[in-house]
Image 1: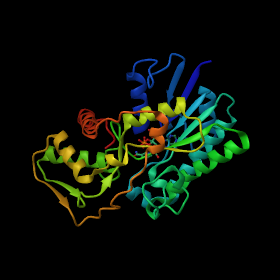
Image 2: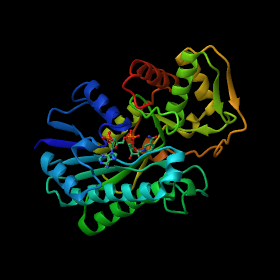
Image 3: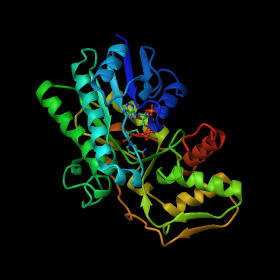
Length: 323
Ligand code: NDP
């Protein structure tokens, strides 16, 4: 029996990372391609997943046995605040179409969807863990995205209880790596700062980081996350989600992020923090205890090394990167 793995959102940051790992890890190794596997990395050009008919056609074309569902309307804080209904509705439509089509497609035996630590309640006791997703309203800035994503967990349970479906979800912390969105206005903190520092070097202007640099964040390198998705695909069969993240002790401050970027970019000009700008939450640690208990040993890429790889990719791919 051959295995066909359909990766929705296959052209994004995480989808490209899975493609990279599958291509570069030794064949038949824990994270490498197995001889009987066919991997399909779908973009929105293959079908707009907000549309049920286009979703059905995609499944009909590839007849996947497994689905890693990454496709989503994703955006930074500003975009989330401005387009709450669009984030809610597009993501509800995409997720509902993927879950329901996976249920209706006879060949499809397993589905892993992707949540995010942004879906957790605003007021919650830290560290975050898998049991706390629904224990209070999400932060109001991204309630559209968060509620749409939370519903996937609700649906997974309902599909399992009513139809016995093998559906589950992953919860990554902040992801970074090659193929990220490096837009200056609408990106996450690492790609945004890399682009800013790159321009500061190129134009001989100061590199100014918003905020005090003190907040702490938990990041995961996209290639590490890719391996964890492959592990889930092959070895995890439970409806309950798993947080995919480096440990709480691996938190990095925004200043450490900026220092590492300055070093990786080779920027030697003026570098400062604009403390008049908001910092956001000081920290929001998530526990990876469940993951480590299940996977039995996993080596995360050291932060500086992962950042170096990302910066090198960005500089080499500047003309084609999402900027
Ligand atoms: P990207 O924005 O890099 O990629 C999004 C992907 O979704 C693209 O392949 C895009 O296709 C596809 N897509 C978007 N809309 C549609 C649509 N209507 N129909 C079909 N495909 C669509 O996202 P990431 O790789 O960063 O995110 C992947 C997953 O991880 C998402 O579910 C996200 O919520 C989650 N996540 C991301 C985090 C992060 O820090 N980036 C953190 C935690 C979770 P195309 O290229 O054709 O536009």
